[in-house]
Length: 179
Length: 157
Image (tube, rainbow over all chains, first blue to last red; front, side, top):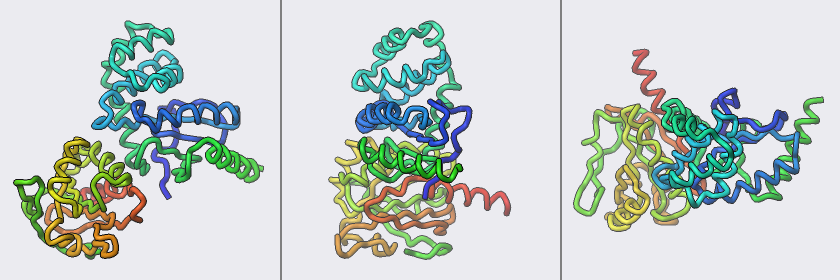
């Protein structure tokens, strides 16, 4: 059984504060992650405040040449508190991830472009993405997307109905054991 | 599988159509031997794509990845070129599966290598091995732990 290493912490991008925790290791240029994106959105809508969602970068640079830069761009947006806006717009346009496209996205979500331009060349952001990748290797990420639910690698199917049902079952267990 | 603590059996196989690689030439480095069933197949593809991203992390531990299947050197050439692999794919083609048999990871039913990993230290001693269910990508966490353990052990000594 593969465990999430390190556990979710303050370096992570975290959406929501529920006890039920879903972590995705994803690659912005990976078509499977692109397919998972609307599924996760629906699941977030359906579970609402009952779900915490965390995204960690796992760009496979050799097969997806734009993925690393896209990951850095979302981190740079994060410095302006717009990580999720950038994460969304990148996944929604994952077939066009040239530098010009990335700047267009940055502008569309209302980023300070001068700051953004500086931040994407920041070594710390590159290291943060590399840190995510290394944590993925250690956690046993073996493809993208790979999901962890409450710290344990999810081996099942992530098509919407199966995935949502599994999370609902986990929610039941969490609320029972929490009482 | 061949026991941990024993010297890894030496062999020589084609790494490209006109080059051969002998395991013992790689002494002074740690070696990760990854036996896999077949070029182009879905799980192998994920597994090797993952390892391709790890060059830097393996290099940090002075380790080199070498992957082996029974596919021909021409299939390897095409597969490796298409996926831009930065590590050698060795062809255990003739006599078929000889090296896989030597490492006790040949599947006689399918005529392919099993999905198996060995980590060998700088002196050529097998320090870790893992046989994965054939349909499951074993990931890289086991390899990283094994490499770290070898390095930590040296510090203690």
